[in-house]
Image (tube, rainbow, N blue to C red; front, side, top):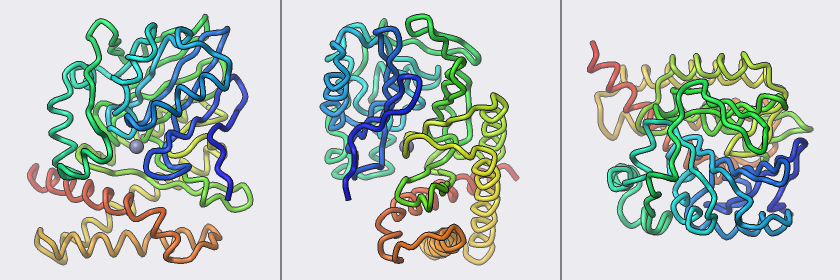
Length: 322
Ligand SMILES: [Zn+2]
């Protein structure tokens, strides 16, 4: 199968494959308008050559890039930001206020990620996270607008996947860059143009009610296109919105059932992981997906594991609040 590194959409938007983990897993989006450019998310340090190559392919010099809009600071989205800033001298990094400090002084962020992935895996995936000079960081307020060569973008704070997540509304083009708030939709699971979507509940700030409210807020802009980091443009937004709400409810139900059957610990985690695997297979069967069980697992294993981990952390917060 041929995986294009760049997918061009209308309105000067291109999905750039960051190459992080595997093809068509992690996209940075490039927006070009009036000879100026912005990236939405940037992948990890290993992704930066792909982003620089995309600029070259579009005939843009490195001083054309005004902004890096980071949807949130998880490292598959923001890990390469400091390195990218070194290459692109005019680029300001636009981030949710809860993420701004971590981009300037990433030590706590690095420690948090090591806690999820382990030291060795962390090094292999992310290398050295470089700080971004504070004067090159813009922390957004909810509803704030910024212009790229006169084209307005509105930043809306969208907790649920992470408390440091904002989405970027392309006001005049009916688009929203949704990071991970509006779930994950791998192009591998497209069936005759119909898209498959799943919620991402990865550690450590998943909040189902906040996520549903954020989904409703995104959809309230009546967008025609959403641009997901995982992966690229989706349409059919009303149907995908309903699918995500149902998915969130189901994931929470499986978590409650696993917790009722097992005290915390390995048995509960195993029960939840098995329930999630069965859940995704049933949904993919209903969707008409023809991949084998092994192929599906290769695509979804990491998400299923991270989702289970994030759901258990959410559940422990629910229990602690009782
Ligand atoms: Zn992500």
